[in-house]
Image (cartoon, rainbow, N blue to C red; front, side, top):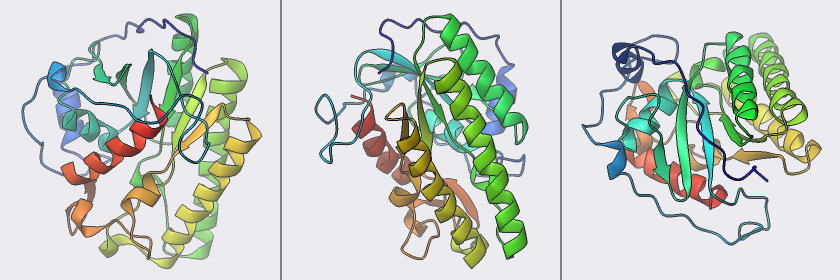
Length: 258
């Protein structure tokens, strides 16, 4: 379980305009969704669910007051915007008894080093929990060769993150599984890639005996065919998420954080 009483890591400020650009850009720098309003971080007041020791299925959950370092890119930035974040990297968003701190990641393969850097800084400050996920643009479909090569790369990278976060730094890792894309940009090999990656994460979680917890983004957001539900997409050609999608993810996150 996370170490209690973790203090926030003081992170060097990044110019405000850089984050605001990220919120409106794709994971790889392409134009994306429109910002979702001007709210203050202290307006966010999220309740939590579940009982100590596990959810209704008996799965491992994170308990206690702590800080969670949230590692991601544009979709995660949109989630923080949904929570009313004030764009100050030193200010967390409160979610139940937790402070959620935004940690912007590099694109792969640099995403590994940036995540490990956050884990090391957190461990030096006393421990805690780290959330990590890839962006939807980090998955490849199109053909078998490209999908398999990309899957192997992503499995290797998340394995390196898990070893550093849990094995070396002794933190708890929450890892988000694959983010589906809109139907326009989905194909059979992309869906295969997503599902094989998700299967690998479940095996990874089992191997770490509860110190790695999977947040089911894919099962929450995807159709039975494996693409992003239309009601959750920014639009038919944009796989970024809207507020309805983030509301659904809030409920899934609350099952883990309580």
